[in-house]
Length: 295
Ligand SMILES: [Zn+2]
Image (cartoon, rainbow, N blue to C red; front, side):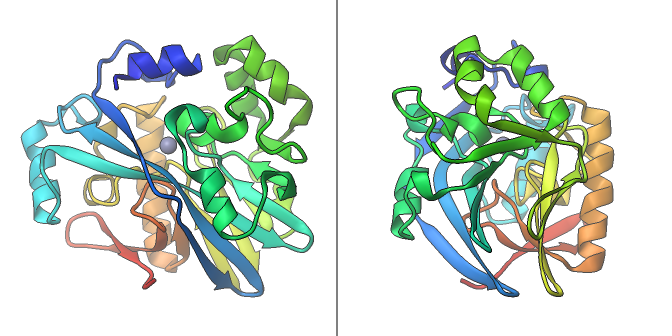
């Protein structure tokens, strides 16, 4: 499916990519849930879908030949002609709150999030807070159900104020009308729930935010779309990706944050890395590498 089609259907835009005919396909995935402990907290990675991106020079490695991108993929043992991205979300049980970070593609693209929640006994009405890293369709598509109603009827929807401003300019009035009363914005860096703090990761979109989840000495960072491919975005973090609104700023943020994460050896959740997307960023001979936690 072309991004242009996605734009029409969701009436949202990917910002800088409008008009670019990149080949992006959404693939249904089986529901899956992976629960793990972090300090005293129980966290669950939830699978929603997969995205296949052609290695055609239009999305990954802008300004670099598809051959160079293919070489990076091949060296990691992946097919050189396309990049496979997971679409996953993270559920955090903290005190009496049930916090969901991002909502996947939603019912129009057969997002499996509702089925994945069911696997861990959570019904949509149980979710108290939805935290959004940024309002791209693969992160907010699941805010509405197939009938266009709120998919999480009892939840506050929280995103950084620049993200909400941007979404209001981009999204269909009907979508905005449905979610507006539930939106509570925050300033980047604010604490948004007990033990959860937002982190400004500028460049990908206005207000793009990661989330730091803390319990005692344990920490995990949901990096949002700081990095998309666990291969290309880490081995060559300096390469521009079409999805970034402000490529120069996004590159600075990616290089700085990946170096910091590799240095601190903090645990990471990456929504587009292979499910369940939990592990560590480590320094490598060329850029960085992904070390998934054993499952
Ligand atoms: Zn994304």
